[in-house]
Length: 276
Image (cartoon, rainbow, N blue to C red; front, top):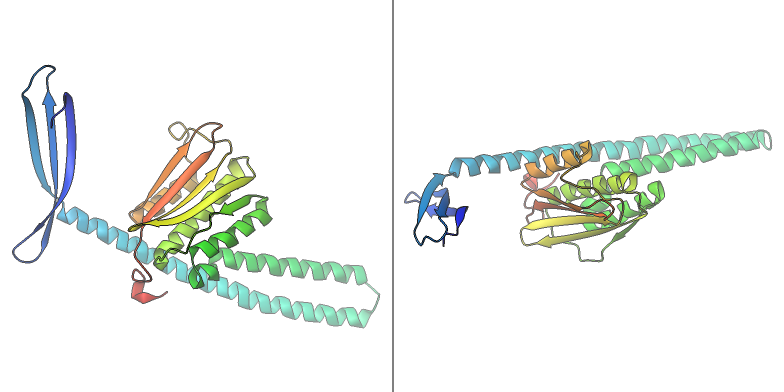
């Protein structure tokens, strides 16, 4: 039904062609009524968007492939950090212990300080390798990785992150990686800019869409007036390339809630070659 004024609506339609292929079309309609009139004008247009949809699918596939390639590099770098640097630090600890035994009480304080520095370096390298590519994300799932990330943010920023208790959603690896990176970026933003000590995280799947939300009761901002920082812009770009979206609900002094949504498939069906 046409309403007073002007309306524009569109609908997606799929047509099965005789050769077995599918034509994707968009039906666009607009209409107008003058006040008090019963008659009006209706204009319809049918657009062939098959090629557009094909290009969109190709773009999403390319984005997923790039994500897998980056994730492989991250996992390789994380493994090198953990194994190679870890072995060197272990050797340094053994040599330092031998030196301490040889010197006895001499230089005991200096040796103890060196030992503490080695232990701290080992902890930071381990944390960095997990940040690059957490094994929990690949071996257990997104919820477990989020809980580990919450522990890291508490240790590094003093930010208390509550991850809502939920069953692990069945997601392909590309989706898990995309949502984990988004979650990490959003929690860093809360820690640095929200001026608040707590944040809430929720992870869920809604049909063919997987979502994560981060909510805080901090300073908030006006999304319409504030120029987004590079982090959020980069996040929008990455998520958008995968056919997803970033929704922001915030107000000055009223806290912020950000929901990241990406298309998902079950298991590892979306993995390139089935694994990375």
